[in-house]
Image (tube, rainbow, N blue to C red):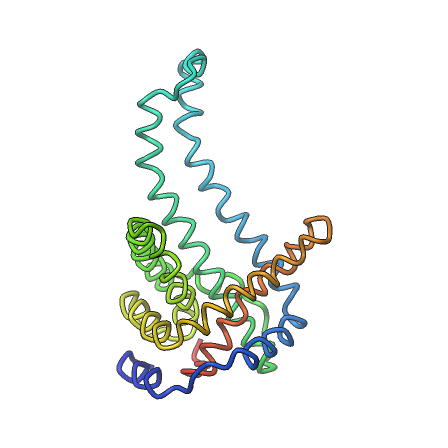
Length: 242
């Protein structure tokens, strides 16, 4: 679906119903809780090397000069390098997260519509998708920075449209990264309050796994992503082309 048709569908879409989306999400979660756990583990595994990238300057400095950390203050050179590396780290984390979240949403479609086939967690790590995810991550980092500048209130507003980006990325392959952003804002602005409530409530429910000695949260955390699937499905429809 091209951006023009998608925009028209968003304009004509009915308001999102909290109860319907939440109930559907809960029913689907019963089928995909294990896939959510695997997605979360893969996300941690994917961003771990990026964390090492942050500490690489400190490790290198410590090897070259073991006495450098005897001082109470961080050496300016290390601080400067970490500041330079931080944007790369954020973009890398977001790229991995977008691709894996999109894969999870695609898996949600499989179990929701009773499709056959394997659970492909790396479907969106293909060259074309990866390049788009990288550009989308750059935009998201920029938006996050602008949200922080707005005394943090901007982040609250941005969390709604930005939460929709993985769904458009997953199911609307014709869209460019910029069109995904535009679509996310169009749908998010139209249903901002309802989507915000769904994100907050689903997020709280996803944290309930912490009751089980904290380990349970690994199995429940991805519940917070499932409402996004139904929001996309109920408003613009789910493409079967991916």
